[in-house]
Amino acid sequence: MVLLVALAATGVLWTAFAPRGTAQDTAETNEAVRAGRALYLQGCSSCHGLQAQGGSQAPSLIGIGSAAVDFQVSTGRMPLAAPGAQAERKDPIYSQTQIDQLAAYVDSLGGGPKKPVITQTEWDDADLAHGGELYRANCAQCHQAVGAGAPLTYGKYAPDLGKATPTQIIEAMRTGPESMPLFGPGQLDKADAVAIAKYVRHISEAPSAGGDDIGKYGPVPEGLLAWLVGIGGLLAVCLWIGARQKV
Image (cartoon, rainbow, N blue to C red):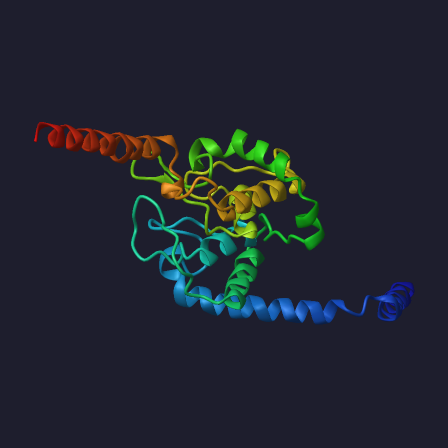
């Protein structure tokens, strides 16, 4: 009898004081998960398995989190058209709403890095100079000094960062896609990550003060162009002057 009274009192107290917004949020989340599962079964399950358990062609998606899904799908790397040394960036085939639904479904299967949210205040307060220091220390070795990308081994490469959005840049840091190392919050906190993203966008959007940037590949193509066009042109002019003097 005492137990029944206690249970009844607990139910009454819960009904009276429970938060009101939880049910609606859960319903919206469940709807996104259901829609995401339908999209997953249609476009992803053939490689990643019906339960996202992975297989011989693709890894398990359990525990990767929403950040990895948003990065891979929003950059068009997934779904993968054909296996190769590395998935290439291309236009996404899903809308952002569908990507969010896929991310919600995969996130429901197990924890992992969440899709980052960058507020306008965080972006405005990000230290551009500090972001440049962190980029040169941690990223330039592979992605090149101005983010133009560079080849790696076995047909892989560090991609050009010119089209990467701030969200995608931070997602790559948090999830470590392809050959990229993973940078967790213990190595680079959110302020550091946002500063790096801001610097990458800066070097990608800044105009070239010296004229044509020649693909931003650095001093090698610039030097080659100087030899072929500059010095080669001067030699041609010298030969032309010499030929006229003989006449």
